[in-house]
Length: 236
Image (tube, rainbow, N blue to C red; front, top):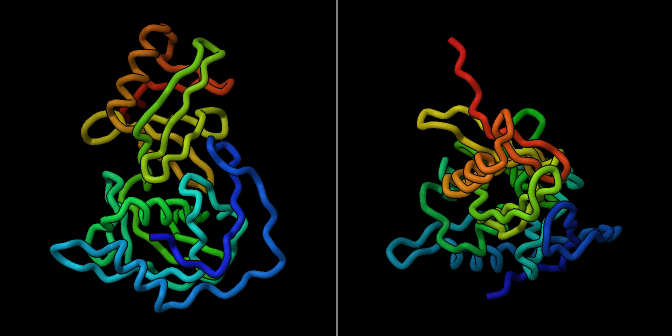
């Protein structure tokens, strides 16, 4: 079912594969499509056969014709309008009012509206409103990786599961490893203040590549930058 909308918003694809490129925002932003139509659509996207879920409501939802494109959320500065009623757990699963959001297409749309504010809050942002969202850890998961070349010429490409967009690890998108209660927790820096947790199978692949290269400290080059994979030492 196509997402109804009053117009298609432009999108930027800097640092993201499969994007349509940059576009300029039009001088006017039309009103979002009718609330009743959007609620009916979102209700169908969040409902399950066993228990219908109440629909999340965000004004000014962008057109969803290109699922992998990135929206220019850094350029949108709408008023803050409260809490979305949504949260993302430590495994990257999305919930609205306690119920899982069942449709991947809706998760993909919301994931592309994410931004982290300077005070550390996560928000879902459109041109007309900003809503808080609770995030337990990283809001996104890097669930696949490919590698090109080796040594300082290597480029590591990571897929973000919720959006299926690809990011290259480089100085602007670094790999960072933190200590967690169950071992190292690796992350990939993204745009808009976000980061993605690197899934454990992907991290193991990175570790194997690093062992083959024998760097000290262990790590890999990508995008002209060296990314250490060493877990930080615990301090007493």
